[in-house]
Image (cartoon, rainbow, N blue to C red; front, side):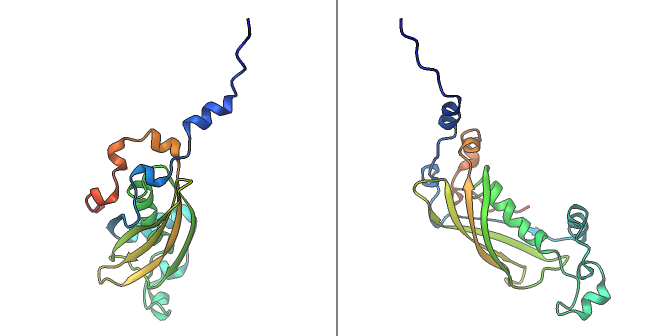
Length: 178
């Protein structure tokens, strides 16, 4: 009697995490998602606690007033962090990891500003779960404070284990406000 060949343990893992092109998940070029939040002094403090960024432009009102910014500004990571939330939670969604960003910070964000981060799919790879997104953050006056692009990988293992209702394309979701 002939024995079956030993199964390669990596094969099972590969089968579980087979590459699913983003288009197969129902994502389409033109899909968008956004999130809005009010930036607070607490955000500055929490970001400083996390990163150690104690730049006086974030804390010293007199010095910040004399700077080119004319007042206290929020750390760029606080501002761009809202894009991370849109990508990870909304579009492409859970399992998303940013591979590359090209962002320009266009205007300062201050405590009390209401910022809206929006992403739109501009291209989808046919062979991998990779999308390219246009990224924009505007303030309450519709001033663009950040814009650029992001390339995002969506891990198939996470997609396979995520509630399907959370994976609905952005065109089917309501606008998120946090």
